[in-house]
Image 1 (tube, rainbow, N blue to C red):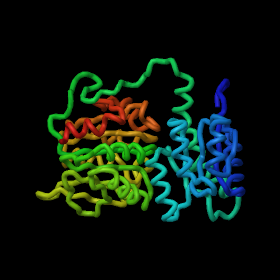
Image 2 (tube, rainbow, N blue to C red; image 1 turned 30 degrees about the vertical axis):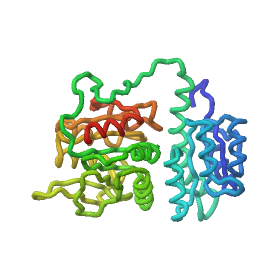
Image 3 (tube, rainbow, N blue to C red; image 1 turned 90 degrees about the horizontal axis):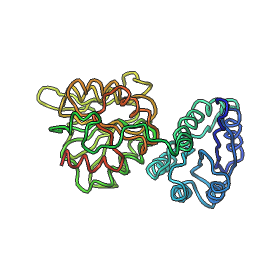
Length: 360
């Protein structure tokens, strides 16, 4: 924290006294972070939100009186932008609830530090998994608060315009690839619920998530609109109008094998600390579809997708990014912009209708 900066103010919502104490202590021990309040259930969380106006909320899912999902819906109506990190167990029930929370507008999630031998082990876990997310997710909110009157420094949203005025849009689209991470489930939910008819081409998605979560996300997205969303199996032939999410823990490629297009899965080492990696998907799309690819890099931390976008750009593909205003975190899209690889920036609300026009 530099001189003059205020600490990141966190509200911790957790019904277990022991777990709450561990979370509070881990946050308090971290430079530049401060716990401004705690709550034991969703009703208390709503009161505390108005009382403390935190920069970020950690929200348990299973709580008495009002659970985390019910509280999340109310909080999002009260404050659409405050970052919310869900704390959940990794049971199947906990995973399904986490996916629901993420599609309802939670910013990210962290598995609870359960079954650890001692408090020091739990602290180390939270320092590695929770604290970095608090810092990254708070950065956008704090920037917006400190630059309320500034002119936006990111490119404006263009539905079909090149940010440099060179290309008005792809001439032909045979496949769409999406790279997405933090804030992705909610953004994808907004896309898929807008489509009353499937696209005329296959859609390939890399969403950074562990195993089991991606299957639950695919099922959730399928239920929202007209598009069938699934985790593919190795060797599957993609179908027009279907969407394929890379399974957690597996890279996904789309390859031309003889006269056939196949989806291939691989447990090769991670790229950009990610498996699945968008770079691997994008490079394969450059080979299999080339200039007929439309790639979109959406909300997420890090820079996964930039190197793959470079390969797609060289192949003549069209590359768009989600704009900063509608992104939970602008790391991945911002990296593509910095590399001067994006032909257009699109607001989240514009992506689904724009794709429907390009691949009707």
